[in-house]
Length: 216
Image (cartoon, rainbow, N blue to C red):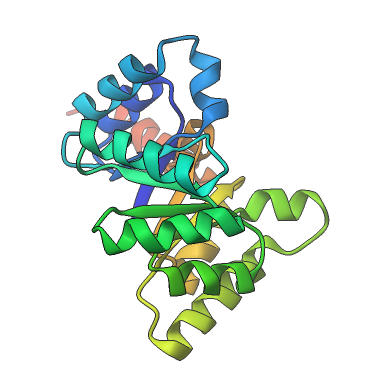
């Protein structure tokens, strides 16, 4: 399973990269806006940190022509970019055209399995079901990932599942067990993946025993 960091914060990306476990970065307009940096400069810096990684850069247009134009601008600057396109009618139309041109697409803001089926039929590289946001309104976000996996497997659809808006380490575990190709999460959640109370207590005991060993 690939792990992506969901952020546009350069320091978080640099720190997470040092762990040696992340495969890419997902950004969105909200993340970029928080950084208060020129969009093009920020994206360039992220790609410099991950020249061979999968970096999602989202369009802001909501009409077919605008989405296609922005997608072309993104890949002209960074040919290995994943262009994030919202799961709306105009977005699906654009995904069909862009995917046929060989442009990799991460379809974002997916909240139903039927939407995911449409994205796959249009040729999307990834579908991003927003797990945590569904949980926040009392719906089972992980069940959506499970339903998408079943549909894609039923029909041999090649679109990868990029489980997004993961809010807990358990979401990451569940997505991996279901068979999502990618999990993306913020820095705080990714840090939590390292920790378990038994690991902490076990290490403390080992070190304490070592310090108090009989010395002859």
